[in-house]
Length: 66
Image (tube, rainbow, N blue to C red):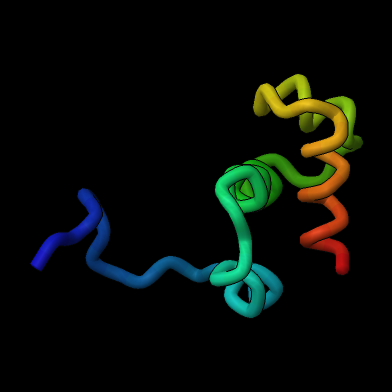
């Protein structure tokens, strides 16, 4: 069995993440982690921080807000 380093306890994750993560693609998951660590932001800021196009940033924001 493999375990994440430093992980003995299950991390507390927001309910909205747990409800939707299975249908999220890579950019949406990357953005979700960023949101959990940094809070909210604009599509422009998210695209700069994560290297997404503005269109991808807008799409992942809509995915999590939907």
